Length: 258
Ligand SMILES: [Zn+2]
Image 1 (tube, rainbow, N blue to C red):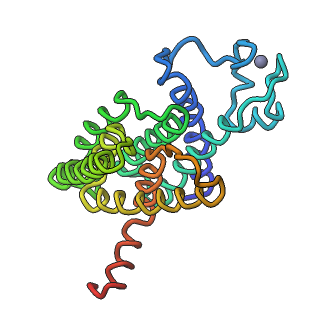
Image 2: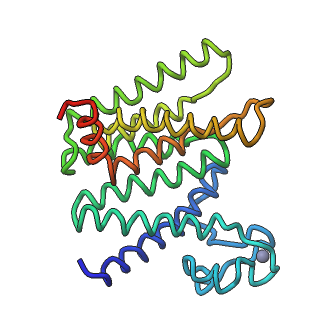
């Protein structure tokens, strides 16, 4: 594994990230993700290919449209950078394997879901349903999953979240988690198996609780904020892909089981 190959994978990841920006922007609006090509969100001028190089164009143009000079959101290069880092990180962790391909598809989907959920408070079925199917199909091939674990992961992950969402709504009368979160959890369980499903449920609850406390501390507790839960689920699944095994063994050693 040479540095050149890692850089190549990073650049490939950023190109996919550039495509994810289009998905994030257009999928919730039910627009085509193929045509028309990219255009400035302010003046509508088409963006030339040489102004559409991931990260590089943003830096050269100092985050402004070449034509109207309006600011382009930092979101675009951020998504490109995140996707590039995920591709390079997965490559370093899993090598040139089927695992790499499958987990990159998963993390690319999770990246799109994270930003769509932040923007719109929804997780599109057009992403979670194919995720469940591709996740199960891939379980025949990846090293850390198998079809039985995939089905158990799908059912336990979605089941725990469904019961939590149902109970929360019954007790508080407010919708905390939505069915979108339940379907996303089903997809992650299908992709990564039952250990990952339980890991993701627990870690996402911890991150969610911390975020909730931070919001109360820094934003005042008078208001009730609806925090999208999809980003926490997605982040937890990514943590599992990189550190899941190490964290689970550490935990088992701490409680004296291994
Ligand atoms: Zn413009």
